[in-house]
Image: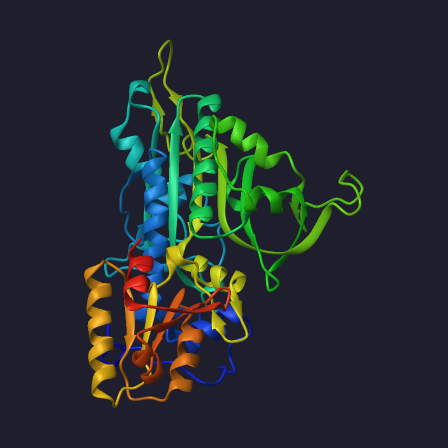
Length: 434
């Protein structure tokens, strides 16, 4: 994509309303613009990142055996009244009345609706287990939306729901999702620590939050330092129960769950930091299936309520979370798997015909090799181009100027390490296309 044709409204100064790094950088890098408090439009650069994250989430859900559906954003209040949550949920729920006077709501979550879909279609234990997921926009009317997409009112979320005959089978489904989450966050270059969590209004007695560690995290966390080694040498092998045991054996707790008196971690091994929640999983048994009459005929007796779990990942929240965990004073540092473009190509001699011709060819060769590239072909000065590339955080920067062109080389910079090298165009192209 040529920068001269792209829509990338970057800002030089920090917006006054932005309090944390991800909010500042998403606004400065032209990724989002606020439409109302806690509600954002996603501009081209931000949308590319959002779609990359969404696809990784989708691939790992599919790999775990979950089946994708798409539920509506607007739900009937009748289902929520049937489950008993309509009056209990609170003012975070945006309630709507349609033209016929029917009570509706903008879905903050989907336990009721997915259970209704299941109960209408599945009647026998032979059709179990099932795990259905969707990636859809949700709305929660936060009393004080802040921190950009980290705590907005409208957000993109993946939520999955498992249905099993027995509690034992339900825990197996829970473990499969636990492992899928480990794989998902590792693919994004994140260190996500699973921590036992309070189930809150969702219900049940088995729940884990997945938190990434960042200085600007919203909550204080405590964890054994062996998680650092586990994350650096990430691998997922063996059966799901064994993997879950390995990742839940070391101590890890949020401030709400941490108890100094019962914490047996030796001094010097307990890490105190701050975390950002990016995923939350629950097993809540028949909390929804029983009141909503989601039952199946068992193998040896009367119908029984199915055992359920739910599994959420904040897709749009992850964009902000990744930036919080990966940035410096100059801008964003995208992990390659979620970067909007892999390469930022800069023409430092835009008024010189030979430099333009060389850059145009390198741009065409990169695209032909399947490399996602953002080509800064504008007439701006070199300083502005370098600053802009650091701000938007593409993993690889390649600068082409008159001196390099004379010597037959381009300057290549790794955004994460700052390392600079001079390579021939052929060597650079081969490296990027590998």
